[in-house]
Amino acid sequence: MKIGFVQSAPVFGEKRLNFDAVCRLLTGYKADLLVLPELFATGYAFTSADEVKGLADSTEGETAEFARQLAVSTGAVIIAGFIERENDCYYNASLMADDSGLLSAYRKIHLFNKEKLWFSPGNRPPEVVRVRDVNIGMMICFDWIFPETCRSLALKGADIIAHPANLVLPWAQQAMVTRCIENHVFAVTANRIGTEQRGDDNFIFTGQSRITGCRGEILASVEDNETCVKTVEIDPSVARDKSVNPYNDLLKDRRSQFYSS
Ligand code: ACM
Image (cartoon, rainbow, N blue to C red; front, side, top):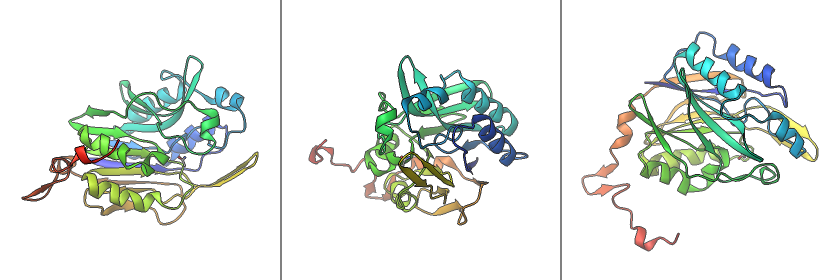
């Protein structure tokens, strides 16, 4: 299967412009799975709850419809970050859509920095969705720093972890090598580039999106801070064999009775 990421440079508050930029980047691309960055259509550096409110969508809103159309044009399952509104709650969320529409939505469980001012923390466990015979789990950006996120997705059978991101700390790209080795999964980290100077904040997003293999190998990466799409062919079933050698298995050898929760 062909999996990939879009590395884009969202302009704060300009949803239509950001949709169009992703469409342009994906012109002519065909794939099976494409991951877009966290909050790819809205930008990240909010300065008020009203801004969050004004840019939010329901799971049937314009971002989900955009993802469905992108699924039609690329043939891929699309994963993309958005602000999910449900009743009076706003979540930093990620949707999964194919050409028939929404398949799943994940609400970020580990909020970073001032996200805690704007968003409700995710209120459901990260789930694995089986689509086209592949098991896909979603997590968002800072979720990486809690190894439990990837581990619980691996325990639920994820072959691929889709990881939309707006990374500002310098460690996640390397850390995902370890996450993939310790869980024997593939990961697609779709990061954004650019800066957002708003209110007291001046975020510099680190780019370097990448696709990491089950043994920690970098299958695709962007060294430069450019907007681009990268894809690679993988066999997702490789992720299902968790043995390290005839005596060790990454999941069966866990001694959970010795781990405090
Ligand atoms: C982050 O979680 N967006 C750093």
